[in-house]
Structure formats: structure tokens, C-alpha cells
Amino acid sequence: MSEPRYGIWIPVYGNCGAMNHPLEPRDASYSRAKNLIQLAEQCGFTTTLIAEHIINPRNQELDQLETWTAAAALAEATNSIEIIAAVKPLLFHPAVLAKMALGIDAISGGRFAINLVSAWFKPEMEKAGIAFPPHDQRYQYSQEWIKVVKALWSGERVNFQGKYFQINDLSFLPQSIAYPHPRVYLGGESEPAQALAAQAADVFFLNGRPLEVVQQAIAQFTKQPRSHLQPLKFAMSAFVIARATDEEAQEEFATLKALVAQDDRSQLLKGVDSEVVMFKNMAKYPGVGSNGGTAAGLVGSYDTVATKIAEFSRVGISTFMLQFQPFTTEMQRFSEEIIPRVRALTVVSEQLSVISV
Image 1 (cartoon, rainbow, N blue to C red):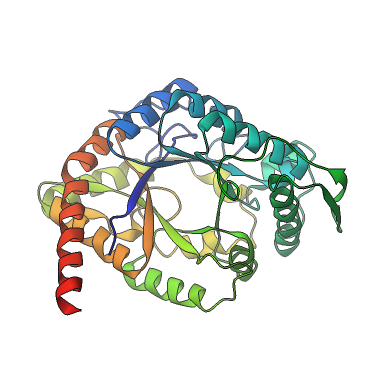
Image 2 (image 1 turned 180 degrees about the vertical axis):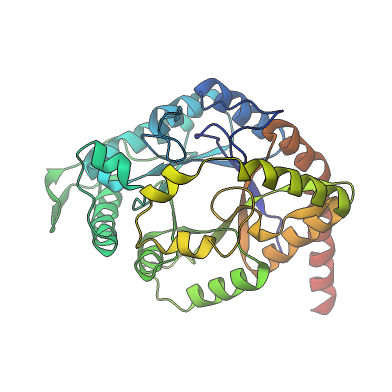
């Protein structure tokens, strides 16, 4: 078992847990994102995810950070952390996006990646007059879209004739610094999403789930044929609540759940495409945080949380994309208390493996 990578979700909606927390004012500004990612870099986090919406899905009257301008600026403001920008193909022509991504790849010195999201929040498309095809058709569109993007990233002269896009004698220079191109993350719980991940992704994003569910999902994925030689890696989203004792962590969990219960989620739920499997599955795991949040069970004492992370690592999770609240203090707590414990467990696991051999 190798030591996992740790990342943070940038709070593009204002907050990652309860929208109204007494110790964390709601703030979706670039200034907050910059301060947070710079602190994360100092704390040993090696990647970050900037989700994409053009209006706030939790409440359309609230601020929403724009992903791609923020990604370019954060690339300049950091030194080592990987910057993953989510992208919805419906919002960007692939040639335009490919060139933008190459620009941020250059600014970051090869630290840039994308998270391909085939869209689920209807109002931001409908209000902008952007077509919102049915679920499976969106994945067909994304499949063709990522083919075009990767072809243009290659630096070769591209001629592509597809159902949605026609590219004629187009090439981009300079080529990407990241080799062979910026990394592609992709998540989703439907069959089309998983099929697209097997074909086009470098890393598959799993939503937070109990260990046995994650283990089954990874086992299922490893059976899918890959279109290229590199094995698919796995990342998982999770909301962390760690304290000196399990009892203290559970008390904080109860407090956060009570705060989350006060949030008005009606706009979010009304705007979700009913065909999206992710939200149907997430309803089985109520808790705190987005994309599975506390369903991963990273709630407990420092030793409990570290042990659970080590268990997820052993079944194949190599990257943990984490949320906290209040974000700054809890991220620092994770850096000081959890990362060293997981590192120690990793060393012990490696020693045991050598002895067993």
C-alpha cells in the first residue's frame, strides 16, 4: 500500500457543508479560494478540485465562483499542487476548451487536469438557452467531445468528422507540458458514465460510500476493457470530521447535520435531472457534504479516521478529495493529526508485505 494523495474541494458554492455556519461565513470569492489553496499546499495537500456551475445550484441568488478563470489564476498563485478544473462539455466547444486547458497547463508548469462532467443541473443550461439533451445523449456528446480535446492536445494536425463536431486541419502549439496530455478525471454512477470513464479517463472519481461499496465498485471497474494501456486509478470524495475521540467527532457530526438540515435545498432538488443516478444513490446516505460526503465514514477519532483512510487505500483509492467545515481549521487539523498517522500505517503495511514475501 502506497501513501495516498490528498486534495481539497474549493468551496465554489460558498461552503462545502452547512451554508450557514456560525464559524464560517459563506464566501465563494476567488480571494478565499486563493488563500485556501495556498494553505493546502503548505499543509501537504497535492491536488484540488474546482467544481463547475455558472449559477449556484444550492441557491440561485447566491454567489458562485467561476471555474476556469479561477483555475488560471490559481495556477499562477501556487507552486506544486495539481489544479483540476471541472468542465461541462455543453458549455464549451472542444477546440476552445482544449486551447484554454493548454494555456493553464503552461501557466502551471504541467500541474493542470480536467474533471469531465456531463451536467446534471438543468436550470443553468435552460436559463442560458443552452440545449440540455437527455442523460444518455449527453454522454454520447461527451464521448465525442473528449476525443476531439485529446486529439488537439496531442499537438498533431487534427481532422475529425463526428456527429456533433467537425474539425478540419487544426493543430495547437505549444503542446502540453503534462505528458502525454493533462490528466482526465471522470465520475458518475450510471452505465454510460462508467463506460466513458473506461474509455477516456485516467482517474475515476467515486462519490463517498462505505468501504464495502467502494471495494465492489472498484472490482467492477477493473473488469471493464480499457482503450489504452495505463490502468485506471481511483479517487474518492469525502467529508472529514476528526477529533481526539470518537465521541467528540460524533458530537460535531450531529451539530453539522443540524445546521445542514436548516439549509433550503428545494432549488437544488428541483433542478436535478431525474435521470441522474448519482442523486438517487446519494439519498441512501444522508449526512454532511456533497458527492457522498460523510458516507465514506471518515468521522471519528484521529486513529479511527486514519485507519479508515488506510483501508480505502488498500482496496484501491489513491486520491482522497476532501471537504471540511470550518474549512481552514479542520484542514490544518487533518494535516497535523491524520496525514502522519496514515503515513505510519503505510510504512507498517509495506514492512508486513516485505516480510510476507
